[in-house]
Length: 426
Image (cartoon, one colour):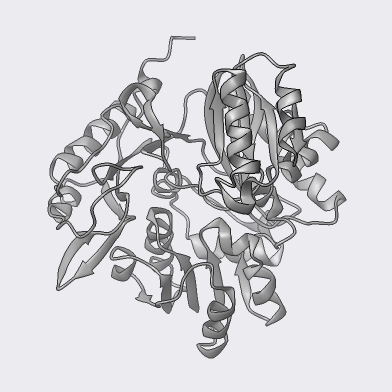
């Protein structure tokens, strides 16, 4: 098969790494890719959200399968365009991708179908939103309705701060059209976790749980980022909680999308708040998470490509999936200053030494090759991922690998997965 992988981050490198292992993959292209993806694929200089050019390329090269990594091309309708051209594409349709493309759409689906989530209201006028805020007790969550590159969710400690963010979104246009409509949402307490599942619209195949680390600094301090690391599985998702998530959230959501005449196929990602062994939905993503995909996919022992095809073809009920029981940890090495301003073009060394430790895979995110040298090319640079016999062993191996890699002003958290180790005995 000739396969086109769309995207350029650590998630896409993990996907490229798995796809390249498949006997079904004859040729792999990455658009636009990165230096890590280039180890497995021929790179194509096309932006991930340029639907028209991606479709032309797929037609010209007679691509058999398009696998879409990031959310923007899904929301823009790349899967629909491929389907209309007779090309198999993995991911939800434009209509179904509204689960991530519109926070209001997702909350309305949850509310209409009785799927557990927090209370909310939707607004496109600032004064009405602030009137609602006046009736709430802080903290208060203000979310831009549309795609805001992971920066559109604000946890406000006071009503005044909530009002300022409402003005910033609706009046000042801080997030462009993504914030012209917003939701004001109940603040949920508990511990966050993520669950991803393959679904063909009839069957779900749930992946192992994971937990992301959004804050830039240790102890969950500092600004929010795209994710500074993740581990799998997350102990907060006990077998009982896992079953509840499938029964009360994932299956009902897939059913709800069918009822709403927007059948969902692809990967459904549920960002969850777990409290007292119950889960409520914080948000949906309509694709593999990043960096959660790295520690989850490194545990996948099965061939990914047949899973992808069965999801597209509606035969997921016949798929057999095998997972490595060992836990995995991913530590993101970022550029100094991230998520603020940072420098690009810094040489990277030590990746081969890190992977030589064994049970380690270094996934590239913001990397490029310049004059034959590997250099930094983004905020999140590498996802150093390791498996171990148990979680402490996986953590130790991941940080041993991190210690062997260097680039100027490299920044990373030192406490990835520490929360799992510090959980009280039950």
